[in-house]
Length: 206
Image (cartoon, rainbow, N blue to C red; front, side):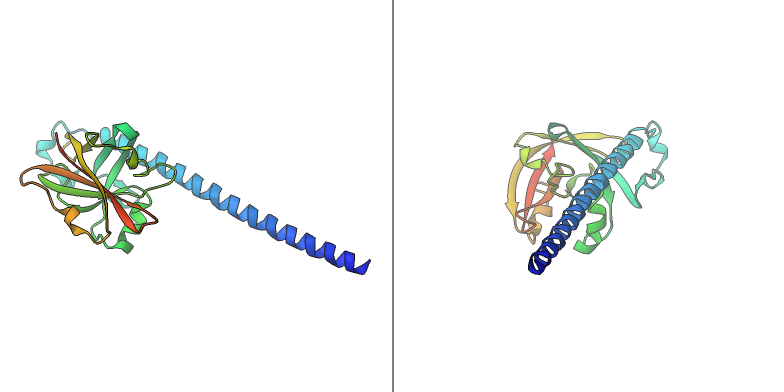
């Protein structure tokens, strides 16, 4: 009888431990999902604020006068990809080492390397490959010929057509170089295969 009581106590302890573990996991999932949804809403508010800027007398202003920030990072433009229904602020983060990029990449798309938005040359922008489809999580649905739109600090929107899609090593710096001189290009960078490789989409002005 005593042995049965001991076994019962052990089973109860195991049950409660499992229950606590399940509750912790569920709580973490809810927190992560909730945080993601809040960030998505806030990023769309920034996109809306950008679209409300009066660019009519932009000639009288410098780009530095157009101050719009998102959680402490300067917004230098907007990236929109109609086919996969995403639109995000592009953040200027200065230093592009992996540690410096971690925080801003959690909230939006970042300028990774290159020229200013819509300048001649190659602008490389990076975003997380989120499983819930946010950021660049749906870029694998894109194909050659699909459109990427960039809006700059002058209020000008330029369309770019995807001409190349490939996977490469994280240390491949050739992706940062423009294919042609005096051509506007944009390179979309995200991760794949557990962050072991980079999924690259290159597009040029139509």
